[in-house]
Length: 248
Ligand SMILES: Nc1ncnc2c1ncn2[C@@H]1O[C@H](COP(=O)(O)OP(=O)(O)OP(=O)(O)O)[C@@H](O)[C@H]1O
Ligand SMILES: [Mg+2]
Image (cartoon, rainbow, N blue to C red; front, side, top):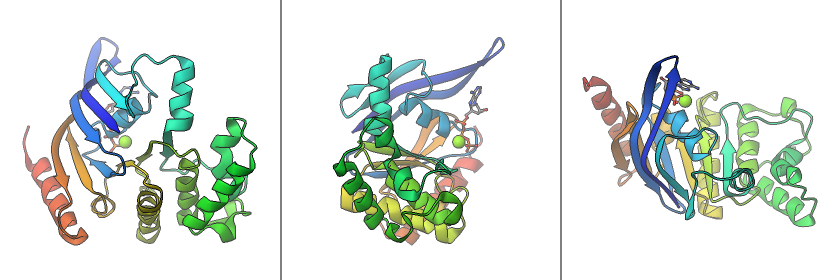
């Protein structure tokens, strides 16, 4: 589904160049729920921004569903954004002036879709994510967890190849975080969605099939869930400890 090969990205500040991604290699398979963890500044958001083509990268290859994402023209780029990827942001990014159902349908409304099928899909997603009872409410009238479930439903309206999420539980209390993770699990189990989530939260990551640890812009370790969740979270915490104690 997603392949990242030898990805390099640097930022320039005046004459100084900061290497942020130093040759990242990773793959995500169809239907997988994968987390990326790593210390602040290790390049997690930069990696997501490269995959979503929001920023250009220096070297390497990214392929999504067989398509090379380098040097896309504007039309192909907006197709990738609107149809192939779904996004879930830390601060929800819901529009205050639209109700829950319209927020969910927004990516399709923007592409000019007014079909009955769209409305049906929007309603189905409300059912799947347990927000049908609030679909006529506005963002100011719903809870953090409900907002985030709305955001997850919206990310799926176009049946994307993959959902990209940057710290989706970052602003939430533990109960709402659990709701977001359940939404991703439902998306994976009922809609065969593929999810790529950046998180610093070992609890959230312990629900994933695989966790990729980044350190200093490179893959430090990949952990696969082979045990039950609690034991996997212990394993993750151990790896984080090892990573931070590891003097580079
Ligand atoms: N637009 C930019 N211009 C210059 N430097 C940047 C830019 N964006 C990020 N950086 C730098 O690149 C490094 C990686 O940033 P990034 O946002 O990818 O980290 P992160 O792993 O997502 O961290 P966090 O956990 O704090 O969100 C940091 O040192 C940051 O200061
Ligand atoms: Mg970040």
